[in-house]
Length: 411
Image (tube, rainbow, N blue to C red; front, side, top):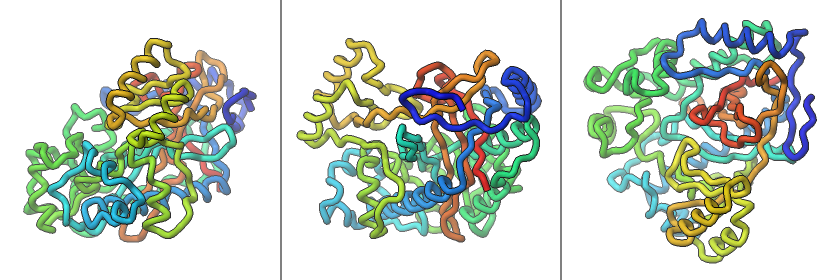
């Protein structure tokens, strides 16, 4: 195991005598033989390993969290009991960009069908949730592809299989005639849309091809997620009338909101009557004057994020930023605290990764996938590990030179 100070360093599996350089070369060749469309697919050949006991605890926390987020969506568009009882301030809801006021009073059986959370492992070894993603979470098919390629390099391994993905998706879709709805080839995740439609053996359609009289369930993977969008206007009528089921529902952006993230542990206690089994990275509601003062006093230690941003855009890691950038974000936050959140800086765990033919430590996070379906809640074992390929980088998005790893959950 590579020894690195500061971050929690995870163990790499036995490589069966293969050198890192040989594995990297073989992985590149194997990926080139898979059709991924125009998007780059950077697979690191060294799998991440999660012990069975660690996974059991993480799985319990993930399902608990997503159940609470589904209840939060229902409450936001329902009675707002959590506001009435003083647990979450009303302004958290009222200032959300993703809030859809027209949905107040609507009560689908489930708001969230599939969630993809961003989970990090802190220096003490505990898993923490960095962000919640429930509008159109992506990456499931890439996790399957990573497993296929890695097994071709290292051989079959005694880890928990990913074969249950189809059953999990089918439980979310339920009965009836289902389709996957895509933007088409211009969508960065189109390859995944096609793979999931093939896995489920259902049509993959673009909006102009959709015959709403012949469909009962739409698994929407379009970038449009608002009611006031072409896709929203197409689907909202039959969905609100109860003639169509959606995965995931319009309006679920209220569970993605970065300020709502500050209150998810409170949501677990409030809606489920349970103590959270999985903690969040501490998120500061800087709309509270006393919390804003604390954040500004500690700004050099914190991460500042635009409240409605995604993909790492606009994120300022103050400890790594230039002094002028820190002062600029200080001024922006002071002027408009409602547009930002602050989070504690977490030293993401590091994992052995092949760079230029050598094993080196690189930061990783985890995108596990949680399914709320007819059979209850389930989690795809392991999910997708994302790795920052640049030394010291804490942002793992593919748009910022990130790659992926296969994730092994031990039996």
